[in-house]
Length: 204
Image 1 (cartoon, rainbow, N blue to C red):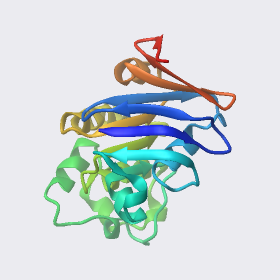
Image 2: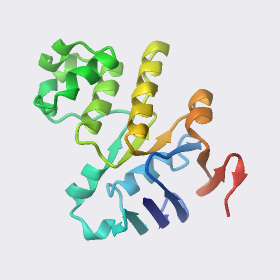
Image 3: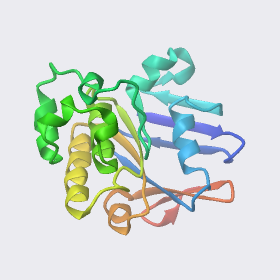
Image 4: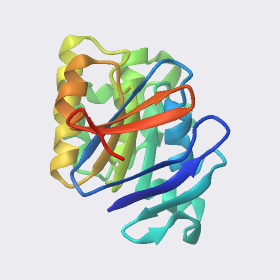
C-alpha cells in the first residue's frame, strides 16, 4: 500500500490518496501545473509537508537513499553519472538483456558513452535502470515522450509487466491512449489544486 496524506509544497495544495499493489494512477495537467514537482516530492527529492507511507512505514523513518530505491523516480529527461552506459547497470542481472531486447535496444549500447545515445535510447534505458532493483513504486514522468509508435507500444508492455509483478505506478502522461489504459484513477493538477477522480467520478 502506498499512502499519501496531505502532501503539499509551494506549488500544489494538499493531496491525499492511496494505491494498492498493481494499481496505476495517471497524472494530468498543463505544463507547470505541478505534476513533476508532485513526483519529486513523493521521491523525497523536493521539500514537502505531509506524510507518505509505503506498506505502513513513513518516509521519514527511512534514509533517503533507501526510500528512493523503493520509490523510484524516472524523469522525462534522465540523468547519468558515469561516462559509459553499462556502468549504470548490474550486469549480473539475468533479466537485463531480456529487457533490452523487449525495448529493441541492442546489447552493444552497454559499451557506448552516454553522450552517443539518442534521446529515445536514454529514455528507454533510464526506465530499465529504474526497474533493475524491482522498486515497489515507480514514478514515471512522461516515459514515452521521446519515443516513436513502435517503441511506445514496447514500453507500454514493459509498464504492464511491472504492474503485473505488483509495482504501483504513478504515470504523468498526455497520451489519450495511456490515460484510457492506466487512468481508472487519475489526478489532475490545475492552478495549484489537484482533483482526484475514479472512472471520471470525483473522489471527495
